[in-house]
Length: 175
Image (cartoon, rainbow, N blue to C red; front, top):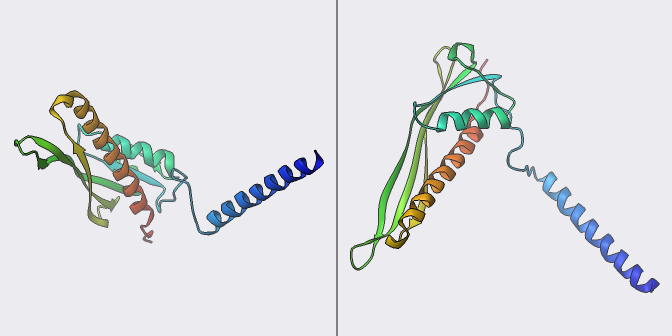
């Protein structure tokens, strides 16, 4: 009985040490979990986005929760202004069946942004992010595919928001 307990304890100790080694190596290489606080080079930011599109509110919410930068209500109060010049969804036919029916769509989300300071001087020039997803399509599943398409666009928009925040974090503060 003691031999079995000793073997089990030895295995647990080895697994614990292996887990600790993996965590140490991940920390040493600079690995960070997604969603940790990012550091932007300005204290306050105003987000200007096209009306009627959810990208503005998504950007405000993400910057407010994942960075130390404060979102303000007017461009005059802000150190920098993130301008969303346009954001649009596109859908192209990717493939057809032998009978001429659509089999796949290519979904495209494009967003163009620019960063200026509170005096209107450009910090980051116009920058476009384009994201693509493929949507297999069957006529018998029209309602399900419409819901899937909306979900894919929402996912692409969330990816674009994360890319924008990452790009903002690389900006060097101008004195």
